Length: 93
Image: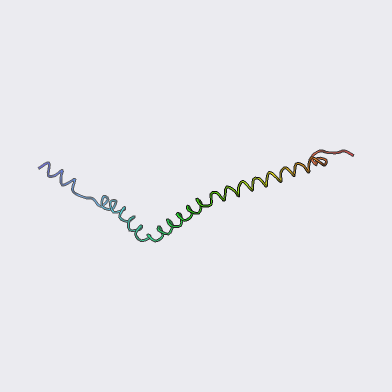
């Protein structure tokens, strides 16, 4: 008799347990409803990844070239300042 009562308690399902167990099913319904959105985002991310992979060499060349031009302009800027009087020094007349 004691075992039957324990078994009935274990088999009885409360409303909270039933409601909580259906939450994952609700998430599956949402996924099923918006499958096209998830598919399009996945395809777009794959395309961006392919573009990033293919342009890695080009972006490296552009970055190195840009840094070279910055260094070139900096050298010429120092040369111009070195030839004339320094604008940072106060000259009393």
